[in-house]
Image (spheres, rainbow, N blue to C red):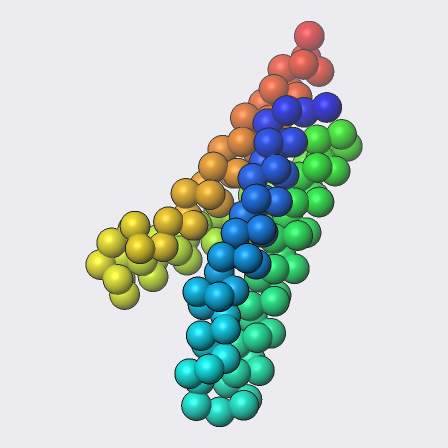
Length: 128
């Protein structure tokens, strides 16, 4: 079992829990109450739950990769998480003037680094 990829999966499980249990009351339910139309509230709900689905898939994929190497899946996960990192960095700095009001970029960056580290460990293990 690849420990860095297992750790990445664990981080994604924890992130999913934070998203659902802390983010729901802080953001999702608030959006439902303040958006001016039912259509916007429905779209917000879809986007919120799509994030939940993505986090669950990230979690499962990392745990699967810890036991079953797949370069294409690994590259796909890393690319998606680099994209998430870029979004949080971009909107944090341009709309909020700082990286820190939305620190989620740290989580997604950490999982990418764990993915790279885990891949290198696996490559070194197979080379010896």
